Length: 577
Image (tube, rainbow, N blue to C red; front, side, top):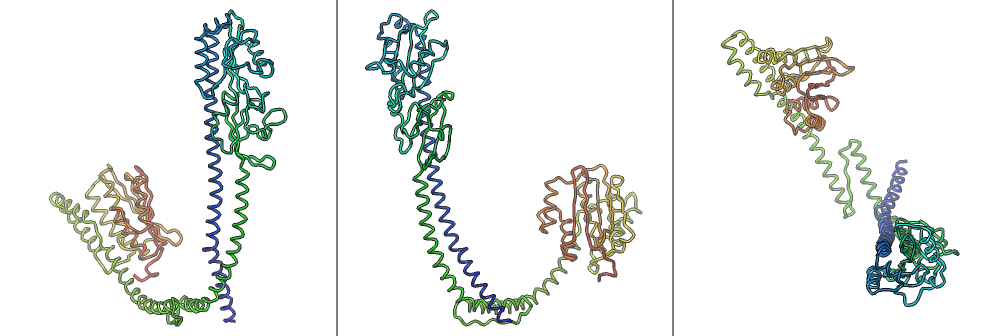
C-alpha cells in the first residue's frame, strides 16, 4: 500500500512537471506571440484609421475653406456697383475681369466663373467655351437659376451637380447669387468648382477613395464608381457610416466629415480586405507551428520528469518525516549532481536546526524577561521633576501636605522599581495609581479631578503592574496646558472572558492624522511616534498575553479621548504570578 501511494505521487509529479513546462515555457511563448501578432494587427489598423482621418480632415478643410470663400465672394460681387453696371451694360471691363480672376485663382481648388445677364447670356467668364449645362440649360444649373429667381435671399446658393457622373467634370460644386438692381434680378454670378480641380487637392490617395455627396446623398464627386447606386446616390450601406463596415464580400474603413452645415459630406473609404486575409493566413501558419512545438515539448517534459522523479521522491519522504517532527532523519543521495548537494545541505540544516532550537528557546525566554523588566521600569522623569518642584513650594506653606506627597511618591517609586512584582491584582494597581492621582490633584488643585469606578468582581483580576498610570500621565501631559479643567474617568468591568479597563478624559482630543499614526503604531508594534507610554503598555500586553489583547483608542478633537485596555479575565488562583 505504501509503495502504491509513492507511485501515485511520483506519477502526479511527472504530470506536474509536464504542466509546469507548458505553463512557464510553451504557453508564455504562445501568449507573447499572440499578443505581438494581435497588436501588430491593431497597430496596422490604427495607422489606417489615423491616416484616413487626417486625410479626410485635410480635404474637408480645403474644400470648406474654398467653398466658403467663393460663397463670400459671390455675395460681395453681387453687390459690387461696377459688376452691376457691367451686367446692365452687358460689356465686361478690365477691372471686373481682374477682380474675378483674382478670386478664381486665389484658393485651392480653383474655380471657373460666369457672369450672366438676365437672359443667361455670358457677360464675362474664364471658360474657354461655354459649359454644356449653360448651353443645354439642364440639371442642377437649371434648378439653381430657378431658385435664384424665385427666392430673394441674403445668401448665395451652393448646389452640386450629380448629373455629370461619372466624368467628374464641370459643375461638381456651383455657388451662385443673383445680381439685383431696382428690386429685380438683372443677372447672375456663378463660381464653378470642377472635378478636375478637386482631384488636384486629393494628392497621394494611396489606397483610399474619396466621395463627395450632398445632403440628399447624391454623389457629386467620386474616385470609384463602385460606391454609386443606379440613381447616382451613395450606396445605402455606406450612407452616414463611420468606422469599419462589411459590404458584400468586402471590408471598408470609412471616415465621414460634414462641411458647410451639413450641405456636403466628404467620405474617405479604405478597403481593408487585405488585412483580414493576411491576418487569417498568418494565424493558420502559427497554429501549425504551435502544434509542432506542443508535440515536441510534451516528449521532452515526459523524459525529464521520469529521470528526476526518483530522487525527488526520496527528498519528499525525508521532508515529510521532518514535518512530522523527526529531526533525526537523514537524507543520503549519491547522484553527484545538484541533488547530492541538496541531500548534504538537508542533513547539515537538520543538525543546525536542532542546535538553534535549543539555543532559541533559552534566548527567547531570557529576552522576554529582560524586555518586560525594561518596560516595567520606565518612569517619566518629568513627573518626578514637576513633583519635586511642587514640594519645593508646598513644604514652606503646608508641611503636612508635603509629607503626604513624599509618602505617596515614595510608595509609587518603590512599587514601580520592585522587580519581584510583574503582575498584581487590579485593586493593588489602582491603589498605587491613586498615589499618582493624589500628587497631580495637589499640583493642579481645582483644575484637575478624577473618578474611579471598579466592578466588584474585577478587583481581584490579575493585571500587569502600572498598566493604568501611563494612560493618566498621557492625559495630564497633553491636556493640562490646553484645558481650564481636566477630568479623568477610570472604569473597569468584565465582558464575558475579558477584563476591560477604560481611561477617559475630557481634554482637547487628538486630530485624525495623529490618531491614525497612533492606531497604526499599536497594530504594527513598531513605534515611530512620541507616544512611548502607549507603546510600552501595548508591548507588555502582547508579550504576556499574545495578540488577542491590547489597547484600543478613540478620540475626536475638542471631545476628549477614550483608551480601552483589553486583558484576559483571570484571578490570582488562575495563574502563577
